[in-house]
Length: 183
Image (cartoon, rainbow, N blue to C red):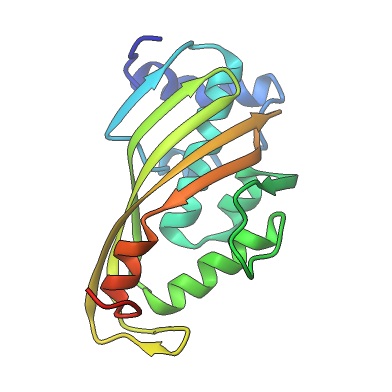
């Protein structure tokens, strides 16, 4: 695997993926505003890799904005969360539920793609979440504390949509920052 500049694939992602029917059709202007990774490593500049990267960037845009249209564009209708947290429903409704709940607690949530690695039908991301806890998280009311944590995701992409996801969040740091756990 070797690093390639994302610029090589960004320009052709929407056109090539749509032409190959590998990714869902969305507004090209919306896709032009998708988050760009700070660092990326992509094994091939082929239609499958471009479609996988596009799906991952759309899903990151969902977490960054809370806009359900990005989730629906990124996730397969039979999407499966392979590390499903307690209380979260399986399938596409799960991330929608999680995002709405977390955005109620941290309304100014921002998500950046720190690293993106794509190989075949797999994309791995290191995401950086930041924001201000001003809402409610369970029984805890925010007092304006800063939230700053990371998450790692591995996606399996099929036909331009994320079919499976494995993820790990730094929940210990997050819960300490929210005041749910002592320091």
